[in-house]
Image (tube, rainbow, N blue to C red; front, top):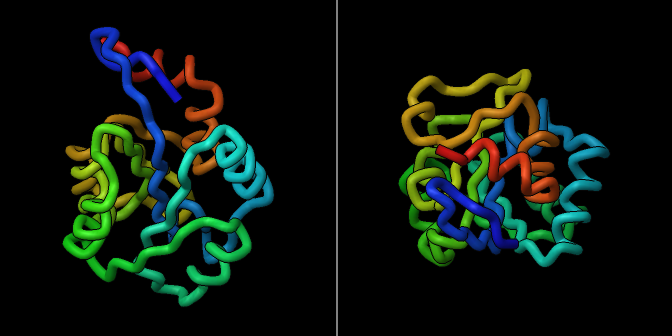
Length: 153
């Protein structure tokens, strides 16, 4: 999907990389609305990928239910290594924790969600956008005018 970035540059995001715990799932559960947004994004031809430290041990089940790829990364460096398979210029990352810095620094657009599991203060210097929920983050790629307005200088 093409969007206008800062200074009107055209950005084509093809990959949306999600963290699991505290981001896609809150207290181990994915909301029905988030599930529907993922299905809607897949219909728009976004490649949705989960890169997780899998602290709750349910990442494989969630990835299977959502029919998305799963890669494991136990720390920020491992997540950064997983990100090397994606073109940075075509990739957005959504997360909430210090472990997600590896995804943020290897993406064109980095989004943090501030939900009930909180965010780590160290990520703030690595993100472009902060939103209240995963649903709000995912919806930016459906309602792209909101994303463009937020990125505009």
